[in-house]
Length: 603
Image 1 (tube, rainbow, N blue to C red):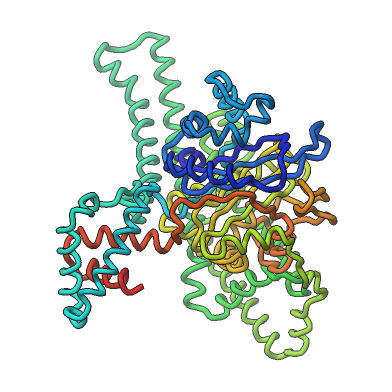
Image 2: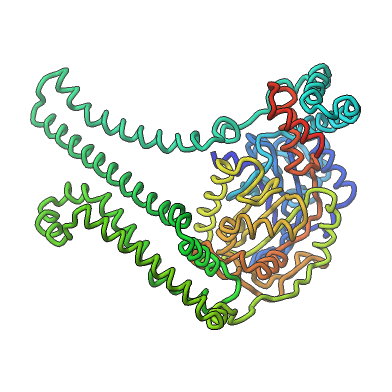
């Protein structure tokens, strides 16, 4: 499932670029014609990366980013591009493969295709905003939206006061128009954006997997007994096999039940501490908000340091103790099966014997103690207001207040001001690089899974307007490349991440840093001073919440694009609106669809 998402976004990372810092107009037009004719690429961009430090070839690295339709394998995509008769791919990459060949033969094209496959990198993780839509579909639905608005202006004098009749008239017009016969069929939707979009459908998968596991164990446990029922009592070997199967399955069944019970108890405690208690007790809610605020605080204060230290001294040991208890309870049946005498005579006598009533009493006392501590802290803050303000006052202001943007980046953003913006970001992986690469891949798989299953309507967390965002670990795990096509401006784009998807953004970049590097070519940005990603706390806190430091880090990591292709030039909201209008016009007549039609033509 995640492979499908990742294959939609690939980068060709080709070392040894011998051209200049601009794409010739003729090649620019040829690439536009190629991508328009192939008609499977939503976006394409070309940029130059500085050569990797220590590489034998210090020429710039050419990057071709492609964001394409779902279901295309990289080989199939590159085959279409390389063997297209206009030869634009040979013009772009041929000099790196066969410098003295002007007109490639079939063998030359095959060599180029193989070389591009060796250079290609599918995304280590990514997010697709406007899901399940081909380039052709987006264009046709956009035309439907434009034509419907034109027709609505004609019908408005007649139906302006009757929304239902207005929507019905537009639906009849659309049905009668042969230009829109294709729209009668509902817009295609993947499972997670269609039937699987409900919470029940998402919950059904893990529940079904757990149920299947117990069914398999039950069948395995019953097989020896079924054999004996058919063929009679077994011999010594058969009885030994039956005993081994019975003991193993019973042990696994018991461990599974223990694991489920431990998970359910932990989930209940998390729910209790995060939902009912804050809802019932103001002091508890304020304490939780205060903890998160202090962990995310961009500048150091005595209060944030105290919260951080308290997390290490109290929170982490407590979580480890809960995890250890859950694991011990889960694997206790295995320990009894492997070493029953040791567990019965050595371990059991040392375990405390507590009744359910005693355990409940301890939990109540613990909760009451925490509530009392929170209430006491709140009263102290109100009683000693001046001391409290000093406690929360920043110890230092470590955020650089000025950020110089390279002119080449400003030119790229100005060129795209009326369309979809684009970003290339290149950073280095922190040492040890193998560990950083592994952590980033795990984090990106989580982000990709969340985008595929949960955030299916063009929003990543609370961050809107992302068409395609993807990350690549390149150069044998030494560098980290991020490519994004997004709506709006760069400042607002980062603000959406800071305020709406801070955890995922921090996870994606916390293992990176900026090291000094020379420009790829004169006129391109370089890095003079090294810096690390803003410091994080407990992996996911702080990080991007250091707003100015994060924006400065992101700006300095950016590289300009030499070429950019946008097949549709529509925002994510416009794409979603057009798809919704298609379904509303040609779907059943009800208030929901009528309202959607009216919103579409009035937007």
